Length: 316
Length: 264
Image (cartoon, rainbow over all chains, first blue to last red):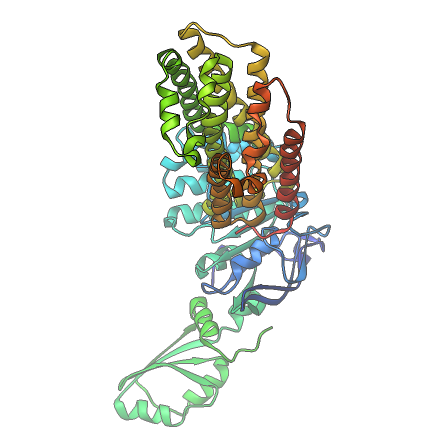
């Protein structure tokens, strides 16, 4: 079981405002459909992970959420109020904090100048800025082009959060950061969620998403494959059963394998299976002979891999 | 200093402004310093006389040496300074538009509550201020050069020359600026920008002596930058209006297209 997950849902905080509402969103580049008919809503206070392999359409979706790009079809509404287009997106930006792993800062400025400039744009509260400065201790006196990636990311995070945004959108925010910095980032995200901010975070670091988010949206080939609470995903992950025995025992197990068991790996003396219903698995194994057995929860990472590999999965 | 996009842009461009201002200041001094050594000789007339008619436009009218006011107008404000400020304007326009987009800083800017129209307007004003500074330094260079050779020209004449140069610089900035914002692509911005600078220069130069090019001269930006009229104490009002209207049209193009398009 994952510990430290933040679980805030609509019912937990009593809010039902849709902070993000995406309807039939479609974006095409030439003949390539990058995002196709995507629909989802995120309520106030939710912390949602947006997960998918490279090229899934996550960044393009976020670009449309922020008004960098206009959809060919569909619409984006933020904070229950702002219909996002390139022309109108700035009206919502006062309430949004955006952090991206590959965001380009204004390299000719020092960190201090950058935060001042961004702060003035948002009418920033200096106390929030100080709290973040104290927590992250970024180097503010050097020009941004001379700073390490980690320091740039700290400054980028402070710039995004210094105005206490209602909605925080993050695109691969911790890519390239060391584990210590990743943990600091995640702890700040949790704090922001406790404050009441809605967090929408794209990542391909699956363990990171699981540590921070209460709901996961999977995307692949421009489509939403599944959109479920983390708890439900974990409970449906099934069990990993490892069996060992003599060659003939393993052969006998393979010969009588139930249809809903999936072979993960096998050798002459070992067999690794995925079985969704542990009770059914125990009934089957009760009639079989083997030397040793271990049963454990399947890791979330394997679930994601299954999902990405499974070409026949029906989109949600 | 970092309160607005306008001041931020000027701060970002401080070295660019310094470099170009210095270059234009030196240009003014050098061209004026050249005057005493040539005004009493006919070497320049001989040089112009030895060139085929088609190339005479490159060296200017030899009669310009007859008076210092004509010399300032033709050699600095008609031949040299326009090319410098048009190149400067092209480089500046590119760096504020497509370069920012390629680097990703345009998206960073657009994450703030600043509307796209505001981005265009504040950047355009920054370009105008850079142009004003560049023109002021051209004038200062010319005045310093004139003082160093013991010459002077009427101050109102200098004002008119510099006002016209400023208008040319702003128009030459506004065209690639608009294309850069409208498309976000380097290729069209660069191609059209270079066509404007080099094309205007070559067209206006050759059309002076190549008959069939004369009708094409209206396509040159320099056609509307009429220093010759100023030298005759006249004002080409049509040319000034054309540059002004072209500039306004370009600002509108930049705003209308940039407001709606995808920013990569």
